[in-house]
Amino acid sequence: MPLYKYVGRNENGKKVTGTMEATSQADLRRQLRAKGISPREMEETKPNIFNRDLQIGGRRVKTEHFVIYCRQFATLIRAGVTISDSTNILAKQTEAKELKRVLHLVELDIKSGTAFSDAAEKHAHVFPELFINMIRAGEMTGNLDDTLDELASYYEKQHQLKKKIQSTLAYPIILSLLIVVVLFFMMIFIIPQFEGIFEQLGGELPALTKIIIGISTYIQNFWWLIVIVLAISIGVFAFFFKKQPKFHYTVHLMLLKMPIFGKLLQKTAIARLTRTLASLFASAVPILEALKIVAKVADNPIITKVVLEARTSLESGSTLADPLKKHWVFPPLVYQMIEIGEQTGALDYMLDKIADFYEEDVDRTVDTLQSLIEPIMIVLLAAVVGIIVLAVMIPMFSVFTEIQ
Image (cartoon, rainbow, N blue to C red; front, side, top):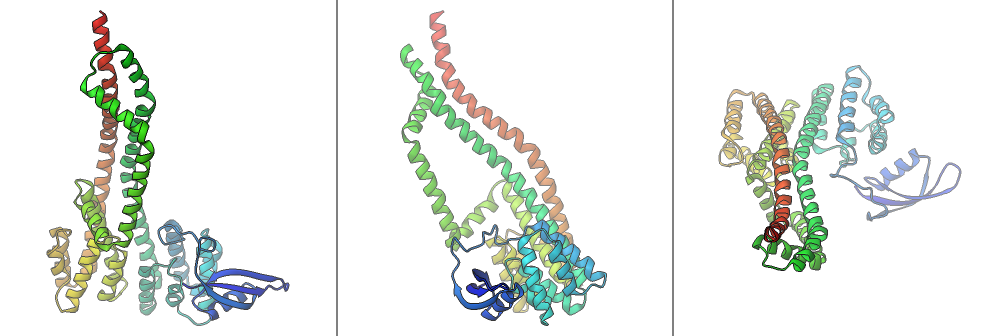
């Protein structure tokens, strides 16, 4: 959405300047007047570090706040409250500042005769494309309350699934970092103390001890080089991951091919895909539009590629299941159930069942991994420390033996 600089006067006649997002100058003028500001000058500008709102994951509203908003919105609509009044009530109740601000703007649009879906579409940073399209379908069918409940359930399940995956992957990453910190601490502060003792004692050191001392000496002398190389490597990786589609695709392919974790990511992606499709179909969103939306929210270029192929297949008169059969990322269970759904006219039901199956499978896999990762990482930490301790103790035992 364009960003505008403005100069105006408030109700007290005081000069006011600032920046604000708006779809047009007319929209900006309306927003300012709603705040009691009479605009004098308006000019489009580019966001910079000083006037840009910080965003995490492209959205300024937490998923839990968005889920609560959908649930409450559905309840108010079901109770007979108008969309305009519901939006006003929810704007006052929500704890999310950005959602509060946007809902006030949406309310003004609704009062001017704009449909809720069209008003929400102006604020894509808060309302995802999936939400807007399902709401639009709900407005057309008159089932807006059911659609909102469906959306709340969808985002709730996606949030829970995402948190589970994050917690499972975070544990080994944190422990791996702990192992690296312990390793560096011992190499920089512990090993040098014993190196001086070994020099005083003299004699031939074991190969393991020589290797550990060599690594310790290198880290002490060139720690700055290690930090620079690591920083450059992370920067280069991040650049290519964001800017090079082929590299982005290859990274995701390697992640899906990883042992254990690859299967988990694959099942999660399938659960997300089928759940999204099922929700869109249940809301009467046309299948080609639904596939276009799913391709955008898939968060995986491999899945996105297959979905777009499926969309092309449908446009040419083929079935949804045909492209899925040809790709390894979709197990037989997925395309067989989709094929049955297409033949029986119960595709949304079949997609829901596939999503249920894989969400439960992910839950079981995550619980199993969490129970296995802890002892494995503890053993790994013990092994790293044990090797270093062994490298130190072997020469000491040799000296004690000679003394005796």
